[in-house]
Length: 144
Image (cartoon, rainbow, N blue to C red):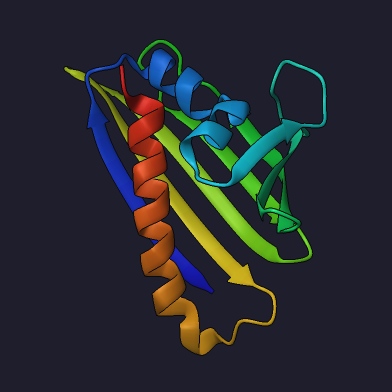
């Protein structure tokens, strides 16, 4: 399983960083060739399902995910979101933790991925590519 971790400090308050990072449809605008559709009604909660569709022309795949833990930040407490990736191509977990700091917030995003038919030998390459892609994505989501 490819595992990577991304951390960002932002001047945004934890509640605003949380709102931006967990606005699933915004992720589509932050990742090239990707759109995100939420399949369950608002508000986001444990049980919310959304699908990231990555495609170039007719070639693509769906990455369905389910929110399995949803604890927004409140009153100085960290926010925690856990996702399960349950697609036919991409499997694994994601964890998003957002902690308030004296100057804003600290965002930690951890991904554990397995790509179907990709030998484990490629896990370091997949982790490196994922770290770059998700690092860019997180930067876009947290921009003012």
